[in-house]
Length: 87
Figure 1: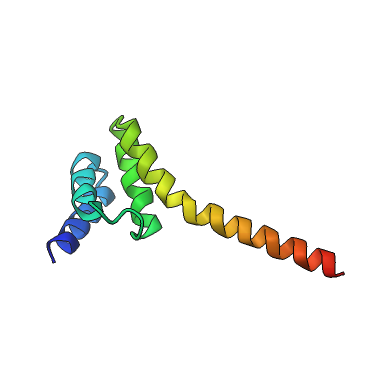
Figure 2: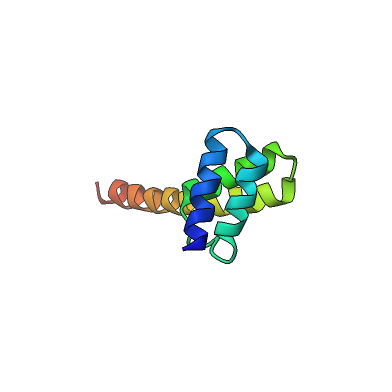
């Protein structure tokens, strides 16, 4: 329950462009669940860290948010090649 409150707080601060408090909330919410968290939450956490010049943290969050997109792009590429080869 507390992690959900941390997320709601972070989202509110993010919308107000208060990235310092937003990042604090995102850090609390994401602790230990970066691999399973929503990619959009990871993206906003990464952007908040980037704005605050916390490059290492920003890269970690953004890298996790993009991994699923890269995987999906790879799967689509494989499917496209298979369709092409069948024709």
